[in-house]
Picture 1 (cartoon, rainbow, N blue to C red):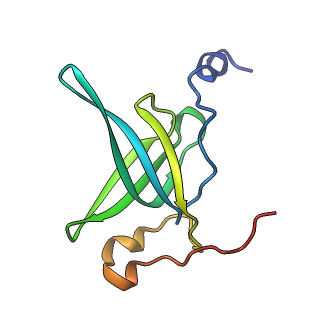
Picture 2: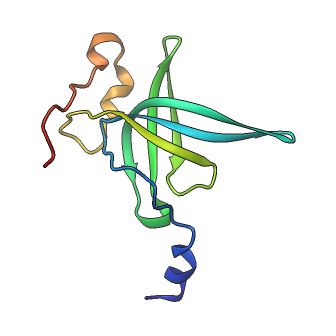
Length: 117
């Protein structure tokens, strides 16, 4: 192992659930405002997952008041309290950039009902 791998290893989170592109997740993110801290929940569909190790990040998209909102979260950030998988989605792409132009019924993702045993 390289010297940097030993340093990075202590910052990696182990409690990240297994999810992939197309899954609906909710990210509990710590927000610090002044001297107060609160948890803000961002719930949406994972449209992109990139990087490995400490550099891993995800892009989550949701529709809020008929406007598409995307947010990029570093997976191993200390500001992420937890990630919950709400629904498994069945998609055939690694990156769902086509979702940006869709709203309503065409923006739905089929639920994955296959068992993973």
